[in-house]
Picture (tube, rainbow, N blue to C red):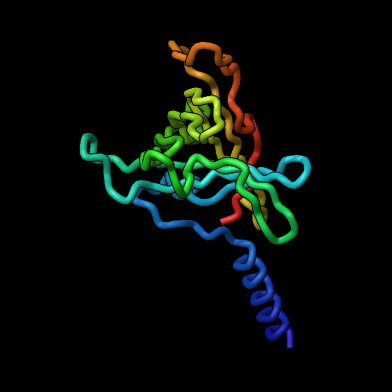
Length: 185
């Protein structure tokens, strides 16, 4: 009887751990796996800001490295439907040209022993500021069974900007900044 109870408890514990385990994507660079996926930040009201991060399918021909890339989007949720507010990856573009990604870079080991996904960022959605910056995506430690979380922060890069006459110069990014996102896929 005692052995049977131990087996049942073991099976229940195993099932619970498997249920909450994170699905880790297969990547060419093992450090990239913890960042690949879809991440969400819920704003007050019914808006959701998303980051979609993937690893290049092919290595860069210049250095034979695989890089992480990503797009972002903002949606309004109404019941079970979503309305797209903006995206860096629009389905249709008037001139047929669109950026293959809004941010891209690689994972680096920091002095404190943690890893960070460091990337060049450009705000490219049609109504966006068109500002460029450096984005830092850092994994936030989470408990066993808790969803994975990251911190997303963008800093503007200095440089010259040309604006059409009469238009105001944007001073900040339109996308949410210095936020904590939760992995959903």
